[in-house]
Length: 157
Image (tube, rainbow, N blue to C red; front, side):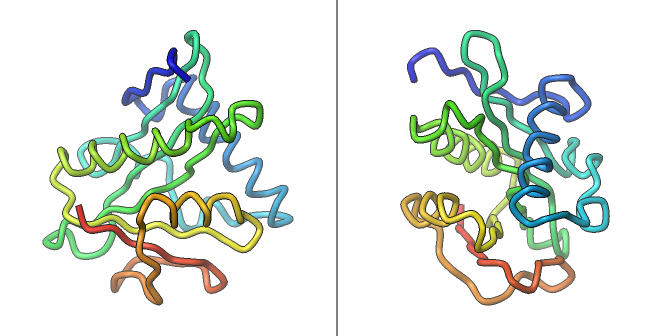
């Protein structure tokens, strides 16, 4: 997709919130509900401890991804949250480009290692992370929440 622009936007902006809540809606549908507010607060995706990227095609939001700090701050660990791509834009490379940009922005922000989790109802996400050379891990860092049924991955930056 040649006209795709990915940039950091405040999580409180309309574009970022529309993508974030589309991701939450899809998770609710795939997993028949969610306890979203228990383990992630939107404010965690604000600088200086987080950020949110929005992918736009012809000015319209088509995807996004967030990063937040997790674990002991001294270790500079981050977590990828709410990667989402609009259904009509899937399988066009938007998710891969969002992940590559998230990794680059995380590195530029000082993160040394990223983590992410996904679930059994998201096989396309598992495939993307494996293709993108993320390493499966059993556990998350101490003090960081991970869903018991989750598939967990990490990448050293």
